[in-house]
Length: 174
Image 1 (cartoon, rainbow, N blue to C red):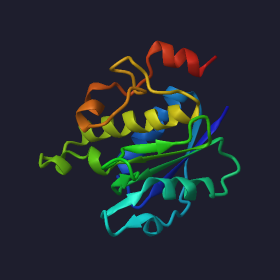
Image 2: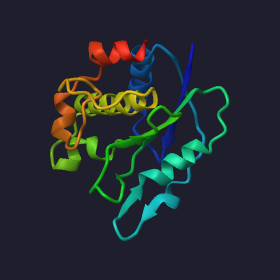
Image 3: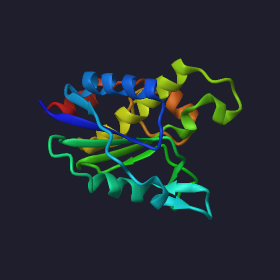
Image 4: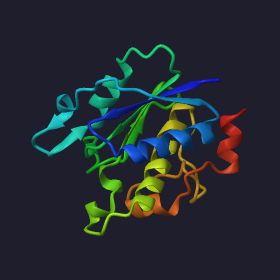
């Protein structure tokens, strides 16, 4: 059985981390271990943008020594970007070992709405399942509700389900 190391970056919501871990076990049929490996979030900060470079954090995850894990998944509480986009919900190595997801823009409060833990947890699980899917070689899916569908806005996230469609699930377990 493969093992995913779930790594907090900053101080992500503890309840969400537990829900994410359980969902990853279910979707990817693996063991999930919560780690406390330190990732220096400040090294990724861009003062010009007021955001954090996702590639710097992804590289930091790659450099962690977690020998028992086949996958290393960072969950951050900071706003991520890549230079060509205003923001990203996450980034992953397609077919690789590491993935990263930001919870920052998944909170209702980011959009001026009252916080809703149920909505937040669902969004968090959906996006982490999506990024981990990339590490298993899955690409963006055309099935609108599949976790592997692309997400450019939080509304895109809300349309998706926190699971894989039958085609993506089949590709994963071939």
